[in-house]
Image (cartoon, rainbow, N blue to C red; front, side, top):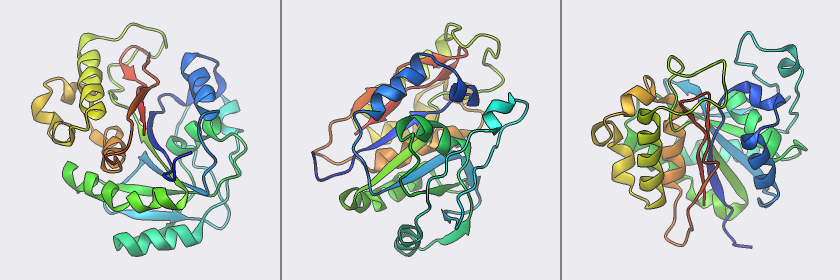
Length: 254
């Protein structure tokens, strides 16, 4: 096994995936068997989108059920992963940011419920500062690279395409429209080729991007993972699925 802990970006999509058996959840379960056991997990989730960069810590890990109108079974799910104060403190000092008392949002605990279902690994989150440029998000990812040498798995959780006004809520297997495929293909090629400039200038270079992301919160976690790429990494495209028509679930593993 490499001395470097892998890191990855995944699409998390609808909370309904938590109680469904489909090709996406099956692929996550398969992926879980390939991942090593880290000392800790750091998640950058689209659902902690704030006016500053913060790191989370909580004495009693509470889940944030930041979705509404779903079956009760989703609100009954627990993911009691411990928190990690020393790691939070170290990241806060490294980045010059504050520590905030906060549990895990579903952008974190939804994929982790499949990837590390025992909930035994200390887990914290890094917020996404909405006031930063795309280049600055990549730079923050670069500053986290040393954590990979210390046994920390870093997970970015969002979606490559995410326009809730354009998805088919009634049919999870609906065919994707061309604009969604265009953005998905652009990001797939750019990320696999480590074309950082293409990823940060995507609003200009990919005409369909603004259709795919009326708000860029679900795109930004990808940029942190892009910042973590090293020359020796092999970049693998994973989870190449669409759900609800236009929602890309594609991810990357390195």
